[in-house]
Length: 270
Image (cartoon, rainbow, N blue to C red; front, side, top):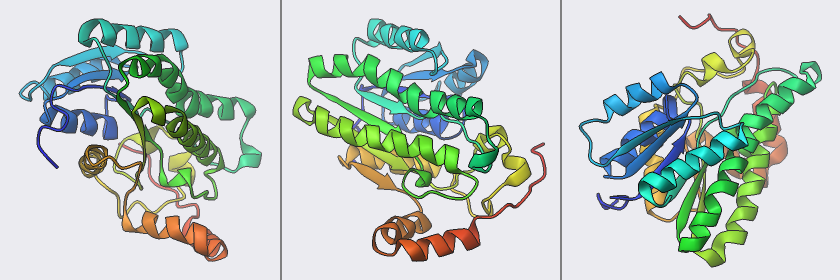
């Protein structure tokens, strides 16, 4: 990847206060991008801003809740006032839920969709008109392996990511004539605080956490995929195998998933 691919590009990242979002802010800043950092807690965003001080480019901290359309609109207006454009939108903010579908409430399902699906939708609606006007842009949708491969105890989370990917595929077709690209990213299990905040996860953890990706590794591969013009990026060897088994041997994949994904209660995070 050429070192200046994203130099001076304006990159708006949601969920930028920790995990993959923070790592992406670092990776784009190393490239010399102008980065808008969005998350709910300003203090955490300021910490990230401080960590990026020595890197090229400017940073803009904008606290906001992606579930709130008015706050999303304020974010985009602020970025437009400060940077005059949005070259790259990274919809990274998300939350998890662990539990059987029959046991969850409708309120929990709505709550998950508000963050994982409607959050990206709100930003899409606010940013895309500006990209269409400039006839240029890139939208990076941070999905998951669960965006194409459903698992036990993850039905609600999978539903939000399946929906996000369907929206992304339609968006890609609708925006092609406007010279706007859509990249869908599917990380595997990543070593972030995501699991600490996922409802019921520490009680019924269905995944082995012995082999997790680092956020920096995810960010590096995402930026490389974005720079090379790819339309999708599946991370980890296991995820790539699952991706193809889903298409050529779905019954075999079901068998593997049922044996692998099962409750593994873990100790509460300290």
